Every structure is written in C-alpha cells, then in structure tokens.
Length: 178
Ligand code: SME
Image 1 (cartoon, helix red, strand yellow):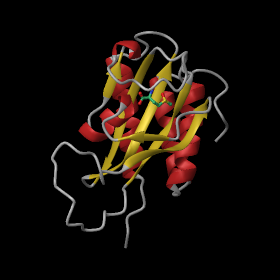
Image 2 (cartoon, rainbow, N blue to C red):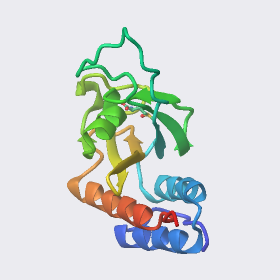
Image 3 (cartoon, protein in one colour):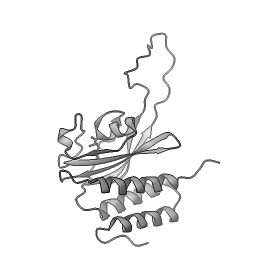
Image 4 (cartoon, protein in one colour):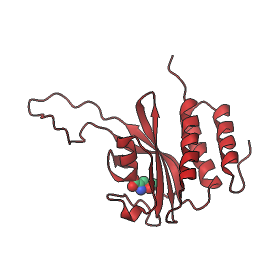
C-alpha cells in the first residue's frame, strides 16, 4: 500500500492498519509502520510510538532480601521501541509517568493535561496531552502505545476507542508460538 499523504478518517486509518498487519507478520516491522501511519494520519501529534516491556532477570535469592509489597524491584521496566517524533526517554519504570501507569494498571490513560498528571515524564516540553494504551496479550504485558500532542485535551473518547481497536488488531496479528 502507499503511504497516506494526508490525515485519514478513523475508518481509513483502521483499514490502512489492517492492510499493514495483513502484509507483514514481524511485530517489530509492524510497530515501526504503525507508528509512522498514526503519526501521519492523525493531526496535532508530536510523538507516536511504542514502549516495550522488559522484565528484569529474577533477583538472586538472598538472606537479606525482604519481601515488601510496595517495591517495584524486579518488576521490569519499559524500554523505548519504534516511534515517530523527537528523541525520547529510553527507559520508564513501572508505575512512573503516564506510560508506566498504563503499563502497571493495564488500563488506558487518556490525559487531557499532562502538566496536571502527577509524575508525568516530560520527554518533550511541547507535549500537552497524552493517550497511552497498554498492550496485553494472553494476560501478558507486552508494552504500551503512546501518543503525545502539543494541544491540550487533544484526545477524545472516540480517539481512545479508535486506537484501542488498532491495538487489538495489532495484538490479534501477533505470531503464536508453536
Ligand atoms: N510522557 C510520557 C513519557 C514518554 S514520552 O511522552 C514519549 C510519560 O509520562 O510516561
């Protein structure tokens, strides 16, 4: 398919995404192209892309290790994946910022004003609103899809639904281990 030359309707964005996913199985290639598609198809974005969940290796057993419910040690973190936009933070701890909150709670975060979000991580000072959708397949956290806008209140419930549908299509297209 050819790259979109202008903003797309939700229907056309979904159909372009479905076309990409039907043509390629590799999740990395698909995340790269989906970032480019979203960034080009939706107006008023300054960043669109993926953070991938990387579990920490299990900590070695130690006499001095005390289990503490509140600690995020060993919980893993988010690492920057394919994206479009300016250089971004490479690692985000679980529970930190909008992305870490979406990842830990496994719920979409639609934030009208990031400056009012406690702990927001300002990778780009221009960002004013944000939409983060967790990627969860078969109960496993894989990462998040993150969209930033320089416009306050950029993301509507309809945008959230559109991007959640796109994420569901991406997850449904993931290769299944034999
Ligand atoms: N603002 C995000 C960090 C990622 S960047 O926006 C690309 C956050 O608070 O998690």
